[in-house]
Image (cartoon, rainbow, N blue to C red; front, side, top):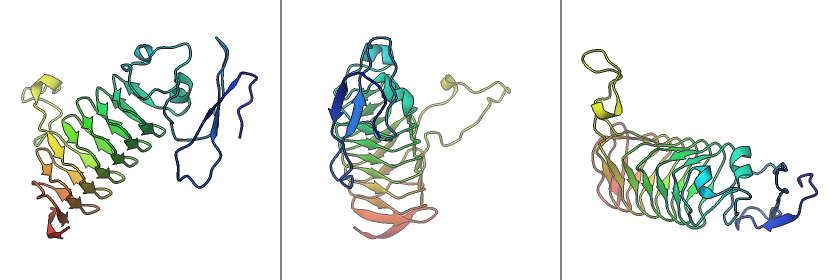
Length: 227
């Protein structure tokens, strides 16, 4: 479906392997004009913002840039995000104060909090939550609905009954090493390191470090076999 506008068109090729779908046609409006984008959940790269700077959009100048229209139409919120080259982000993503490496894909309804670092060529599937303190190295697969935590003893209030603020607790970091895979609906508790090439089974609750190149599964997650 082609947007209805008289503005010049810019041809942007969709990524390979999408079932032979035709390329996305994006219309660039004149100054002060409006544009209606086609129904396409993926945000492609190398699109230069029109009449707006990256800083005005809330993130630093980076290798991947999105039009303000595309961010708005796909309900994508990027605030102070450092993007590598050829990053792809789907609809309804909320990311702030984080880093996303080259060729990484972020699915719909994902939240990525501040001080999260995601490496190159990762896949973060839809509905996952990456909280502050998570480091994901290169080539990591994160399934749908994966939850990370960063506090072993979370509380809403302090002992005196006052609301607990950021200064009242300390982030406990998580590291996912290169090439690891985490199955859908897994929960990764604070302080855990998932070793290089390891696989975490779907629905697992990971309470302790996972040895490199091993498969773990269950609640709590236990060793199953070598990869």
